[in-house]
Image (cartoon, rainbow over the protein chains, first blue to last red):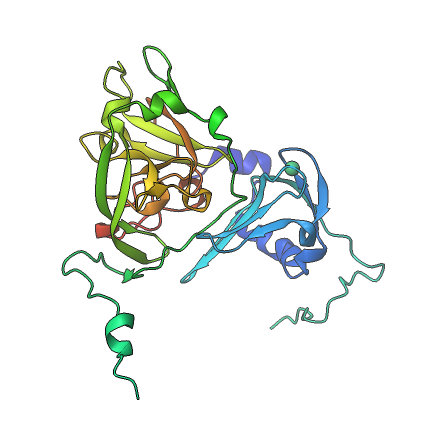
Length: 109
Length: 201
Ligand SMILES: [Zn+2]
């Protein structure tokens, strides 16, 4: 069954987003700046408040204590909730690197 | 030489048979505190409890009025989704049946809401019939803020995240409205005996 919106909007299967998103999520997110959806405060993720002993990692805004991000891994399932983050900003170095050593260059098979 | 046996003083009592749900362990005398946020420090003078939403009129009890309601003592087992269980915990407070006694409502669901913004949703049928309390003492002492004081919800037949700490009221709803953990992939109902930890379990 063809979804008419798909043709009209050139809508792609969200698998196609995985490549570009990998760019973000191989970055050391502690250097990312998160904008709180609640109060608009900008702060590096590393400056946020982390509650790690709950059933998930709960990252809260250093200004208003609102939930910015929730993350959990259980078994083979990872969950990420960014409802409370209006924006994640990562600034790359001029050469396009993100300046962290763990990052592996992408090698096509 | 010592005849004092570490075995007797230190040994954890045996897990009561038939009372440990699947995938759980007996935490013994411990009482883990799992915090998803800062512990609210609510002044007792400004604490109140409210029943709102789909009701014929909002009900509100000040701290003093709440303490004047008929009280019940209960001893129940707790089951946390992070897999610890704790047996024979003693609490005192007010039955939700008492709080809802003369409320006229068409609601089938409720959202418990707390200081600090926490919420959890439950079918109204699971809050009534002697299954749920708003408790303000634990083990004979005023409930510590770390464990949800001034008062927390206690719904022991469901995973413990349904027993909202720092509870301030219930919003009765016509539609089910998933709460803090329920919107994050945790099971909407959370029956420990059916091991309903995550959505789809
Ligand atoms: Zn904020």
